[in-house]
Image 1 (cartoon, rainbow, N blue to C red):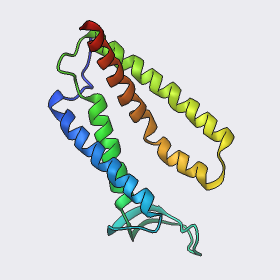
Image 2 (cartoon, rainbow, N blue to C red; image 1 turned 45 degrees about the vertical axis):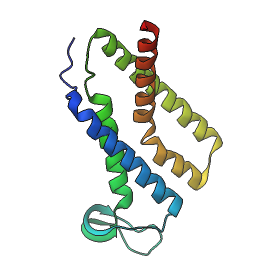
Image 3 (cartoon, rainbow, N blue to C red; image 1 turned 180 degrees about the vertical axis):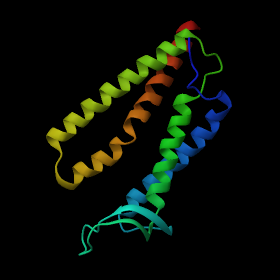
Image 4 (cartoon, rainbow, N blue to C red; image 1 turned 60 degrees about the vertical axis):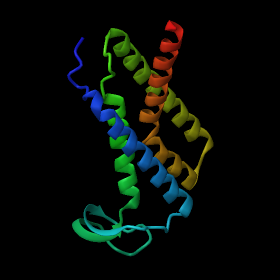
Length: 157
């Protein structure tokens, strides 16, 4: 059983901290509204084209923008990957099978949800679905993997 891609188990708490903080901050930003930008910073923009303005396209430009959404996104994705890719205390073939099954289940579920959204949700609400869709594969995986792990532990007792 080759698990070279897995991280040490001791990183899992860090993953949960990043994931929870990122999710909390992301939801706060979502409910405060699009215009709410508590953190402004100068950043390098690889591609910049103002949607509402008359600016032409520009490449590799320093711009000042709000980065709170980006920080929340980075925290959620990084934390989620650390959680998903951290070894369990006992990493055996059964856990590897749960991990693989959970990954496949998460991908299938994610794309079923996306297909349903494509059929029934339109305009800017669909864009919101796509933003959430960045996170749903890792969230579905974490939920499914931990549920199966919990269920197997309950069945053993």
